[in-house]
Image 1 (cartoon, helix red, strand yellow):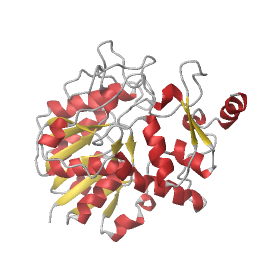
Image 2 (cartoon, helix red, strand yellow; image 1 turned 180 degrees about the vertical axis):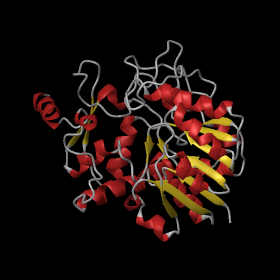
Image 3 (tube, one colour; image 1 turned 120 degrees about the vertical axis):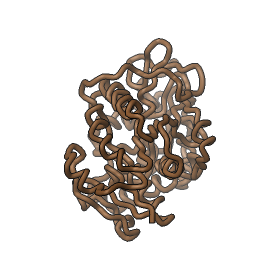
Image 4 (cartoon, one colour; image 1 turned 90 degrees about the vertical axis):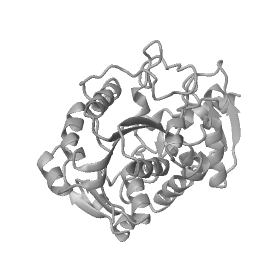
Length: 343
């Protein structure tokens, strides 16, 4: 039986990977801080939990033991994290480091978290330039990308068979920032209209956690040092995403497609972008990766999960709080109602 160890395996990506591997006969073990965060279905599938802090090198070595066929790191954010990973990767046949499309920079140096939105000029290949590596606070807007780049460099310079995956706008069950909530919440509140800035034409490529899991299984059987984009086979616009979610929940609303004359704060969504942000996944496909499904097919489980958690009263506090600053600008009902009343 093949053995997989997933660092940070109780989260969205780790959970999806554990489910996929356990379903095809792998012996799956995950690390985390809180055993209570391991989803019940993973326990039922035989996934084993190890209490371990990501920064505790000795504990991680103990958990890994003599080695694994696959080592997956879902919580590698800095160069120090990557350096701690290397001794573990030496005892794994294939290792995966989950990075992010946030590392990419355009010709002017703009990136996902810069004040000026990037313009990549077309689909982004893995050869696209990245930001310079850095070591400022990785939890900050300015530090996230540079720290991920630094972590990638440590991993790739090691010469070990580490596959670096770069997903974008990840969605799935267990998300701690479920972007689809901006539309699910509107359905739950029975909003009669949805306002969409820039006519809802913004595109930022989404990536299903289950599609990342499928790519991880692919590279598990094809060890190597490489960088691979990870994204859904389609890149829907914000308007298409709104339609998909409303349709799944059986809700109908009027679309209000705003143009440049509208208040720029109205109709914002997490997929707004003046220039399309699309990842080229040719390299992943050529490796033998087969997506689980497109955005509409793969987002369905997350939408149902959000809906069910809300209906159950959210006893575990999984949904965004009403005062969550990230979602506040996307769910400004008073401003929307004022616009509609004056329209």
